[in-house]
Image 1: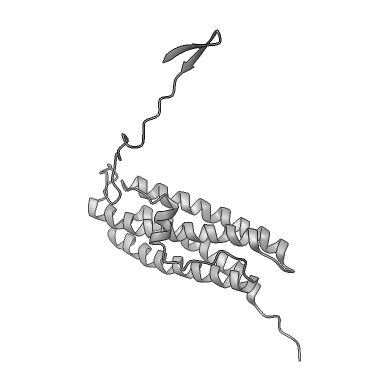
Image 2: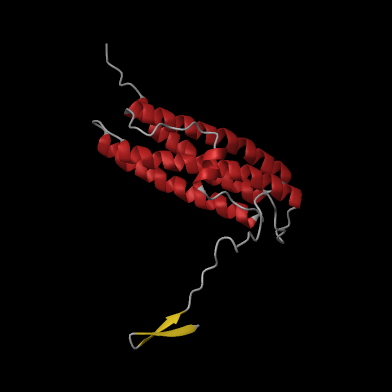
Length: 195
């Protein structure tokens, strides 16, 4: 702690930041820190790779929900504005759970937007506003991408004995996305006209 005087008052400097050029990574991306979790390193490596892909696609889906929450318009504005925000919050919880699972396996989770943009399998959406059916269709397509990979990766985790990853993918990722697909898809159903 350094004390200095300024206009007769003592100032205590407690925080000393490091310059970024002097900082270094304590674990490189793509490496596994061996933890005593009763899983072989090779299983952790595969699960971390898979989970990072689901993570970046879930993060992209989360951002899509917030974009559409802000930009939705039309007669169903209020209902969709609330629904998109609810789904955003649920997807945000999945992002956190996925990142924490990656870390608990000894891996390094993707965390920065530029890395997400490079890795995601979800097509980039335009910056401008789109009509509600287009917004919903894009969200449904993104959900389908997440669901396909989550199902395949859950099977791989189960076969490898990684029950924690399997449980997260099945109980949280798949179930949340399936429910959201149902709730969204109902907004695209054409009302039937009695004959």
